[in-house]
Length: 397
Ligand code: GDP
Ligand code: MN
Image (cartoon, rainbow, N blue to C red; front, side, top):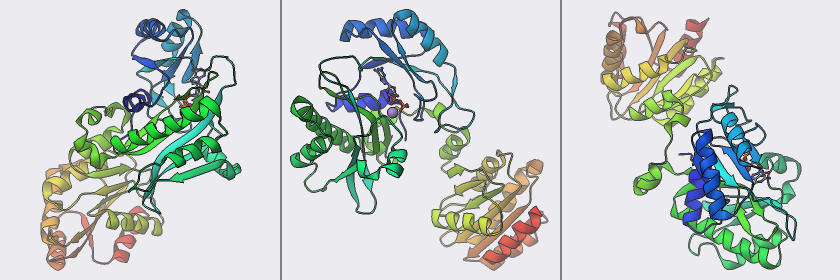
């Protein structure tokens, strides 16, 4: 589950990570009020107005702007709230901005220069250990840094038995070229950041930039936090941070129905049980020369009701030109699934206007095929993988 910057920062702050402070506003007038409040709390004169959407690269798209007085706060917040912000990470039409974060300006001049670093905490699946990835090249696209100057990216792996060690935090501060007060600040920052990552059961933190201020404080200016969905049950307070307006409506509906659904760009809808078979089925569709319209795992219980829900969700996508059902009947018997498909088809009347190809394998597969062939419904049945692929091809040519 992804969070907004302001939510991520509130988690970090609760673990003692220094963050650029700010308050959320839903409209221009509220932004002015929040700016005044922030000035009273922090003494800041300038404010940064930051669009809150689930995507990075907001600065480049015009979603992060500096306001030097309250009139500018009002004007900029008014511009940003309600805009469709387009960044390299949003869909081409952008994402509607509903809220802004009114933050203190932390790039003020002082005794030393400000510096931007990159830091993320994530799981290295190769070694099964968490790691801290960091770079002197902050504020820019880390993918670019990885491509052009990979030697500027460092990693620190953490032994789960010992946790983050003091020498590791010091090595990070050293590799970032820090000394004196900023060095000490960085070791504290890293330590608190890692505690926040573990404590919140996150699967990714990306802090870009981590800022060294002109008075040698280290703080998170941005926060991209992804929580592990499987651990949300033990973080009721964090689960409440979910913002479904940021998620695709069709995926939200599928989740509520207990289906594992990911919307894709192709024309062949898939209904499959088991993630592995779903992946193989998508390969099959590509092999036949087409693109899958979705990933859909109906899970263990492919009964009529579930199949019908899956049908309805797949058919909401106007690009779908055919549906391939590929179910392995292990615990669930194929004939029950076949009955489910036939019943769902009947229930849906003429809602289904595209060809349906069903491949059932496993327990009672023959009975299932007969059931479909004798149903009187225009449903095509297949036994072999190849046969199903050929039928998809025939249906779409
Ligand atoms: P992103 O573009 O979505 O990654 O949003 P960020 O939160 O990283 O902000 C983008 C950029 O805005 C940063 O890299 C900074 O250069 C700039 N920025 C953020 N906070 C401040 C601030 O307090 N003052 C000034 N002058 N610039 C800021
Ligand atoms: Mn950023």
